[in-house]
Length: 84
Image (cartoon, rainbow, N blue to C red; front, side, top):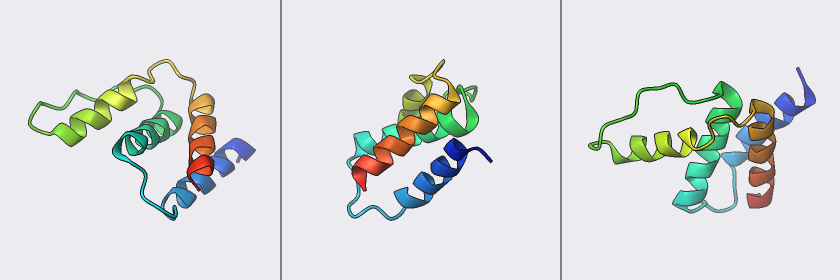
């Protein structure tokens, strides 16, 4: 396992134990970076207007299209560290 992947996994665990809950915009950014880092570009079907939460998550992830997974992992790690 690469050092980056290990640090990404640790940041994922650390994100569940933050001292305070981040605002919704930060939570969406965390979600999008996590998905891009773990799965790559969003290829899922866009949710309908009825599910606003899923739509916001989908939109946030889609904005990162083309971002390399390693770069997304590093940004996720940096963001969790800053919130810690």
